Image (cartoon, rainbow, N blue to C red; front, side):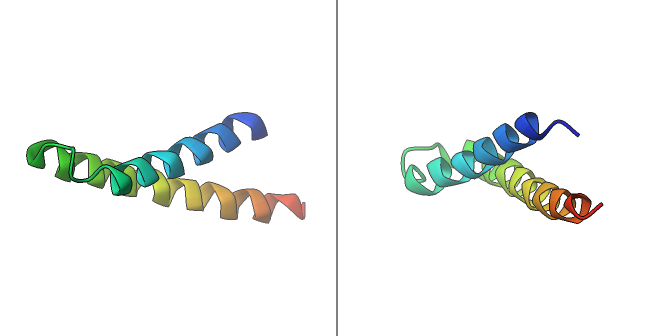
Length: 59
């Protein structure tokens, strides 16, 4: 597993979530819902990658 690519994805996913939270008033309502769903999916997958990397660290 490539750790640098995983780390970049985790940082990008959390950054996208933070930007959406900070700029929620500036985003169009139609686009806001779709981007929120995508960012939730990315953040959930980032959490999975964090747990998976901790699990594989012991092996």
